Image 1 (cartoon, rainbow, N blue to C red):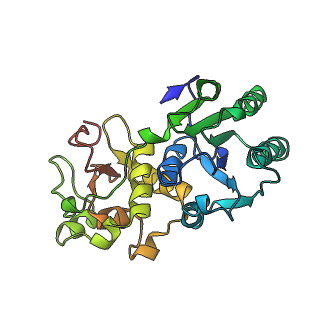
Image 2 (image 1 turned 90 degrees about the vertical axis):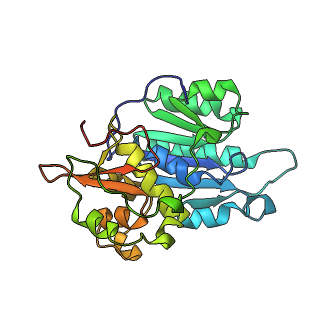
Length: 274
């Protein structure tokens, strides 16, 4: 990650406008991008710009529906001119002066957006950027925080770890974790790439240095990324949903608070706070 300056401390109620240049950024990591963005607030406005009649954007269409991103149609009025960029810039300036936003996020590998970033920051807004490693340095350096898409961790589910492990000593398993340990986890949930991406991103966004995240915070972070209701997956709440995937460890502290950790994180502490 390249940082022009350190971002302010994130709070869940911070409002962020996510503007995507679909012509210049790959769709494969949109879930991971939203997970990363949830560390800084909630992407209330999600728009993707491009000529949606073009074959080159076919891969984006399912992602738009999955993550509630509004497609903004922009025809190419003349050869060699990028009307998409102009449409994005116009919308960004309109949002700047008509909406009460805390930050903007621009997803593009096009350095032509550098002046826009500078203008948004001059007006007191943080600007987070996503783009490929080919992104020119002026755009990267202009952003408050810029993350290369290639650096986003793959979120492919590891079904081989489906059974829930026995919780470590000094921590009591929650009721949902105990129930999950008595049967094989629901592999269909573990194979749901979108769900796993959101849940893992939520844990990463809210975990402490010990690798454990408060369950309540992780559930809230998941809802900031996508409109996920655990009941739609056969679980009564987020603790049950995390447990049902078989991809997370869940423990309850002595004061009754539940914590969740990604099983892939081998650097985490054995117990929360230890």
